[in-house]
Image 1 (cartoon, rainbow, N blue to C red):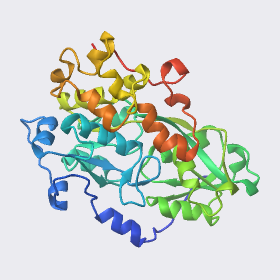
Image 2 (image 1 turned 180 degrees about the horizontal axis):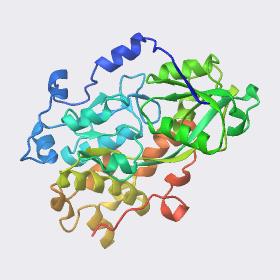
Image 3 (image 1 turned 90 degrees about the vertical axis):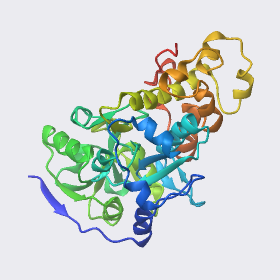
Image 4 (image 1 turned 180 degrees about the vertical axis):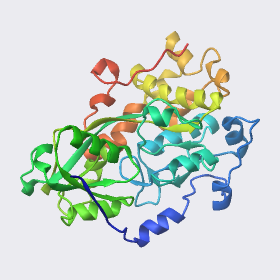
Length: 357
């Protein structure tokens, strides 16, 4: 029988401050009220609204290393953050023209629907029920993940079946919560859930043996393991519970904005496939290769068809880099996580761009 144990979240002063503050990385200071009380104008595309405002408002996790968090220099970084900066670079020729708002798993969809943010770039799994929501939709995945379970090495737990009659920590209101129950029921493994909406509480509960395992996306487990007192004392089981394609979300009924964000995603992938990076982009300004000239906006008008500058891809690469650079900077180098499914298609991965023509 599955039993649910609810732990009351602790109040962390630093987390509270982080949640109340909106870090400003733009050249046009905007108050918290202005950043969160955005009115949706039905006759305007989000692209028109963002361009008129002069900066992007991006909803992020804000507390997840590798994806979105505030570093020691009080600057946001991570894959989700760099994706938002790529959009800002394309729109404004300035990757810093973006404000980041931390949103919780519980509020993220409501905040996006209300128009308080322009884009949700918050390690969110693309599922059918979410993608068919009447007000929301996903753009292409920017990270392919899987749900795993972390345990202490000393526990002797080697596989999921070893969690029989033990407790597992999991975040409420997430796909991880539902996937865990489905998997364990199917495998006929009896266990207890320790659930909370506060991930700090969950990882504390795990570290102090209130639960024998903790489950979420493997990338999150790898990142959060580095914050534990003794990271080497913990291991991630080889078995996975589910596949988790993580993708940005937008409001429905806004095809122009959807096209812009979608093709910026593809531009990051296509740049890596062409071998164009932030380090060698200057060389390609004079290329004679027709496909690359078209991609960089040196010929033709692909950008204007999106409502962007024709050189929007060049801006992105110069200021943020290609997908491979973003991955290595935020995940590969800090955590030693191989590309795997996030490699380009010709390297056995799932990253693939339609033609830029």
